[in-house]
Length: 427
Image (cartoon, rainbow, N blue to C red):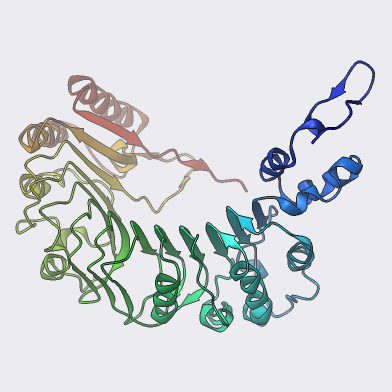
């Protein structure tokens, strides 16, 4: 395509307009939809080029996706975001889309509108579909199954994200059936309304995430997913099952039920403990799992535990039995989740209560256990001669902090400590 060089002011040549249409489509794909559409005002050369962009991102930059918008007065017909999507989809012409993304508040009153948007998706060759409808109220959330309509095969879809939506096991099965090269399925902060079966030797799925979801009594059954290598999933007693997942190397399990015991963990992970290389555990009740009886994981190299309790002297020693079960471990981290986010004026907190993360590295589990034991023993010895309490004087806090810093210097190659940074409360 030949175009005349255009002067964009004294001494300036508009060379972008000389680029082929296909290159301009790619450039416009990096812009927000409104900004891309506005380029039609530049000149006749740019008129309508935005209609061929490969990315359609609709997100509410005002971040109104919160509970304040959860009220009956929200109306899809007057919502500016809904109007924008409807307008763009009527004009857009590209048969190919690398990304179709909706990130703004929608509730079930707009069920039929979401269905029309998905009809547009079915009519395009979409690589990535990302829906975050920002409705935190489960009673008002959009029901995915009621919006799918006559779903057509999506031969190009590789990644799929659902957030703040009601999803059923049947919905998951439908996407797995109609998306033959789907690599990643991510369902977050949603409701799983029926049993989910992720199975089939023909599945290309490599990354499965069903996290922070309300699964109630629904069972998640992962069977014969031969390409699956990453799993991030909520685990409840007798509601999570794995079988024949030969490539699974990374597992991230969120365990919040007070009924969850070691036997539940053993039955859930028994088929892949010998091959796992990285394990992340999010534990609300850590003492029920971090003890003797932890399954042998001969190839595990990274173990990260996030627990809801604050650090206590000696709390790391029982975990050495867990580390022993992973002879090739090279990194062990424990993250303490602090509920208190704000500093209290005039109150000094014990540095141990401010400890956020303790990470230990070594060439094998034996070396890591030595570092953990030395760290715990040193803290215990220091505590015998120095008061350790949640609230302390500035001098006591300084002495404890100096001791922890000295420990980190002594074990510089083996131990890394990170502390909470408390925010000052603004009144």
